[in-house]
Amino acid sequence: MTKDDASTLIRLFVGRVAIDGDKPALHVKRDRVYQMLTWNELARDVRRTAAAFVRLRVQPVDRVIQVSENRYEWIVCDLAIQMAQAVHVPVHAPLTGEQIVYQINNSGARIVLLSGPQQAVKLVAYAEKLIDDVTYFSFDRCHETIRTQPIRLLSDVTGDISDAETHAVEQQAISGITADSLATILYTSGTTGEPKGVMLTQRNLVSNAQATLEAFGQQTDELRLNFLPLSHIFARTCDLYTWIAGGGQLALAESRETVLADCAAVKPTRLNGVPYFFDKVRRTLIEQGRADQNGSVCELLGGNIRHCCSGGAALPDHVFDFFQSQGVPVLQGYGLTETSPVITVSTEHRYRRGSVGPPIPGVEVRIAADGEILTRGPHVMLGYWKNPHATAEIIRDGWLHTGDIGQLDDGGFLRITGRKKELIVTSGGKNVAPVYLESLLTEDPLILQALVVGDGRNYLTALVVPNPDTLRDEIIARGIAVASRQQALTHPQVLELYEQHIGERLRGVSPYEQVRKFTLLDRGFTIESGELTPKLSLRREIIEANFAERIRAMYGA
Image (tube, rainbow, N blue to C red; front, top):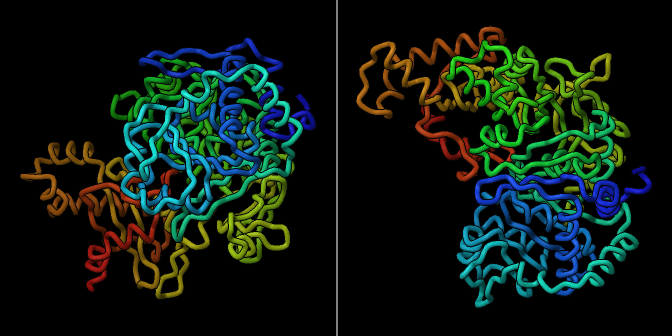
């Protein structure tokens, strides 16, 4: 399939079905057992759902919102929305009702698709704030009503679709959608501020999937296991669309908690994940006493794994080194929602420790005078939905300003050294990249999460989330007498232990990058509390606001 034959997602999908129709395509758990679907079976459901949307009078460029966890229907509806020539607005499933309502209203959605009662209940509480003329459907039966409107089962409107209807809708999509057509709006969670709707075109998504495949080299026997949320552009492009573009098979993990069991069941050749997951794999093997056993990573991930890809946040060097020593490289990439997302990627034959790889084909990268990473090419978004001012701020003279600080080495490999808006400037005028220090701290088995603070202050402090299991083992081994978990977090011997470990982890950084004081927290940072984005990045302002009193105490205020 040439690039000209696949200038849109629908052309890409129809072409793949024509080539591989009866071949295995998708593995989905039903009743706790994986079942396989062919490309033809998937295409049948996509066509029927697309025709149902057209029956419901969905017009070209109408927005259709989907609020759902990863499941078979997510993929069907994504492709069906495209085939109906509408615009898909996927919403992160963990968001609150108020956050979901904002995206429905801001996008002006015509149809809202819900996975089931759990998502429906969120909207019921904010029903009066929802815009009019929205129709609600669900994948699982819901008994809730939204502003007296029942939530209908989507399957009820797809059952009696004729073959003539599906054929007509598909042909209209092939001829009606162009590379410049708006395909999706994705609301960035961001670390600060109100969410902005990133507008990505067909060209953005297709070119990015194809260029990423070109960088890696196509392997038709690939079997990917997807567990990252498809509502996030990383998984959507790098799991879903590269699978359609390159062929092979895709399996959907049942949940984030079952990934290792799902690996054992489907035996993937490739995994895309975030650094937290890969560090969790490392910690699991350490806890099992198998970290030094050759092949233990491959065995834990199903036995057929060739490599893994990491994105969304910085991969700590110690995690990279561990997987490398096990013969299963974790290859870093880099990108943003605004860039579809891939800008650079490491591959099996082109990678360097601490680097996020070279730019993918067709993508340009340069470093501005102040160190900011700039990029341009077919991957750069159309702009922010209904926000020309924000668009003009980030795209200037054709270059998208990423907000990240980095360096290009002699081989064209990019290294991320910090986030422009996350840089800490101490009262002494020193610039500190907190992400780097936090990655050093979380190397320690005693530390699960850490946030470094110090902007405008004369020294750095840290909020530290202990690893409860490791800390408990240390308390027992050292014979520290504590009556409760809360008491443990303030016990002098425990604090002395953490002080030693923090000092050891930061031994190699400059004096002004040392953490002078720290506080042990009794809970972790979570998506549900708003302290983490869906890709598990720290929302610094929210965390600092939530723990303001403890931060002030560390500065004696």
